Image (cartoon, rainbow, N blue to C red; front, side, top):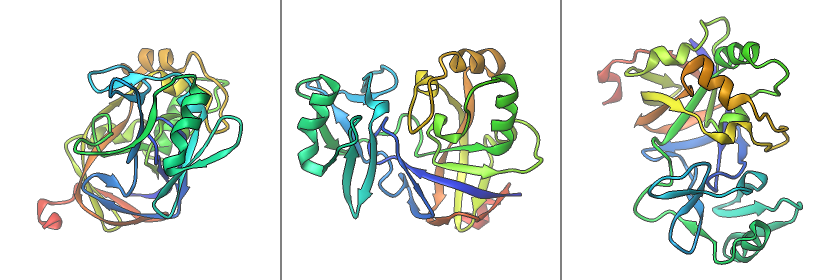
Length: 237
């Protein structure tokens, strides 16, 4: 058992996000999460790593995004805010990348591997012991959900892989451990740089931290919702 301690939504992929008190959850995850991304002239989307669809785009971590209704509002590194369709030119100038634009998701989700990402307080405490001096909280891992697991064992969420878990009225299936990238060590959202953190995670846990999940049953997710592990399939019908 545990409770939902924090909810985070990231309107634009790889930018800092917004903390919520409640949010609607559906098949693609938190409503509006990573619905937008910065797309380059070749059609690749800005990310913390390179892949077939994504390209590493240094500097994105210094931006932040929130919603005003359904309109994304981007805070530039200099503190100015730009809205929706007018944001592309300002983002391109701030990144020094002519031709990039803010693009809404089309047919394929902007998520890297799964719709939803979770970390726990017990695992954060475990990692903090192994990374002394690092300012460490869920923001480094861009988690959607932070679960307060109290005195649960270290890395407790790794035991949930393959299980169904319930958070209030929302039910998830935990798919896999989350593989980390360089973004965990970048300065972002008020956190200073932690250049050795990725190596520490590699050394102590094979470059993984937290878990990824899919949504079995949607609903409204709220701070304080109780967390249960091992839901039966009948509960998802």
